[in-house]
Length: 182
Image (cartoon, rainbow, N blue to C red):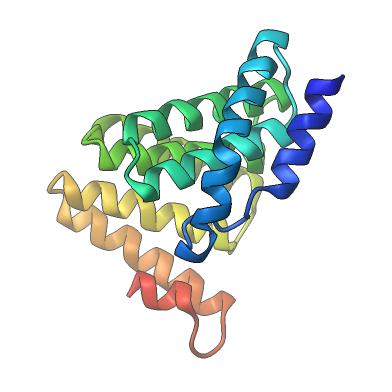
């Protein structure tokens, strides 16, 4: 359909690092078109990975620009719903959407729901990847942050230590993910 092609085109044109200030001008120019295409896609009940990707990029831009965290949440929720329609059961794309939505929910103060989504992403990633994996380490770290925010310092420390040990096994020398975890 024309809508699916327009979604694919916008997903390809939208900067893949919308959190970077150098990309904000391009993102801003594309946002009205992206919203229009998303509206058409919703009416057609389109479920495509390009649409979920576009929604994620839009949500990230809206969130970092301070345009509205509730709008970012809504866009991430749509992306998650589409990924769940596309993939049954455990899938890396679903885990990614769970994580993205949890980040925004945490910023909105919805800590309990954010923690639930981070835990879902962690368990999904542990089922998907046996042994050490960067996404499992990231999820351990995220749940650790959630636990720390809720005052469960001992469990938070345990998960952060697990994440750090995993990242050190995965990366030799200096690595940004290790620095973040530290």
